[in-house]
Length: 505
Ligand SMILES: [Zn+2]
Image 1 (spheres, rainbow, N blue to C red):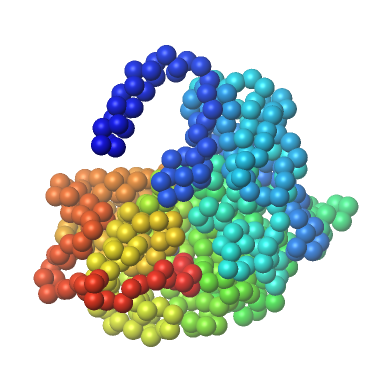
Image 2 (cartoon, rainbow, N blue to C red; image 1 turned 135 degrees about the vertical axis):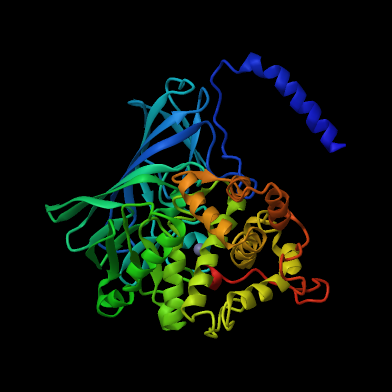
């Protein structure tokens, strides 16, 4: 019944559309992501962000900023929204003219003096916005712009950039970035992208970083504090930059040595590294996650202190692999997250198998350590198939935003890739894995984009229904080549809770 009404409504809209299409109208307050209805915005596509931020001496001091956004209108706009949930906004200018604006929850609603034509480029400046660094805690928003022992850093995934930057906060709208920092002399600032300039005058240090390849807002890294930045030259054309909280440098800089060999290992499997530079930002903390902030992944000391060298190295590999899978190629909707985490877990596990890490029995990872081979691990994951589909939704159809970062997207996503390899054979699988980051470089892709590419590259049309059943089906399909593998019955198994954030990488 509902469906009939909906179709009738669409029919009326379709008839009415030509009459109303000419005039400017408000951009949508969400980009159209079912898991995060208010996230991102409609009606425009950001090309570039120029972020200009001023930090205080104390890490707890509010951060004041200006952001200038170059965007292209995808419809005629009478008004449009940015996402912003920080403390306050000073003013908004559109195309050089002061604009009317108001805050509505996490939305910054902007009415330009003159409507913006469809297809036109326009410039928005939000001035004197204020964001407040917070202490990481149970509230996930507290990790957006957070304080740790040596300074502040950011961890915006999936929907937290809006807490410190007026933006179109959704990975569907990627853009290039400039970051300009103004910090008290003696503190060090660093962000995604290559360093362009640095100078000190009047007791303030200014530095500029340029992220020229498009980036999703969830991958912003802005860190200010007592950091060492160590440039280690180029490795096969990639500038290596490691950032360590100063007290950690003697111990942790050497622990980042695997980066070179891991870059080679990933390049052999996924093709050329997609950005200009790479490195880690190591802080003393126990955040409960590591994050693939673009070109400068965030990792804390707990990964080494609590879990040891093997897990540390495997986590470095996981975050590095995200530069291809998740960063350069971003998800179109958050339900496509398995394309990030399934691939990153796949490379983490296969690297772990080659390097003996899978065998280590590390408490805190119930399902990815203590297995001699990838086959054994995948068999154990396979057994969870129906449980996880019931509890957190199919691999590419999370049941809710709360279930987004469940094991299903990580181990479940890796299992889909394992099934694909079983189906098409190793040679075709390797071709797919190289074609995917090359074809979709700098873009945001859907699960169906991946499926279509896998079918095209393998030359097998039956890959489409095969993968669709694996990622969308309510039941776990049979595993090709392993007719003996069985799935636990969810009715008789323990009820899974959402994994704690320890599982997040
Ligand atoms: Zn990950």
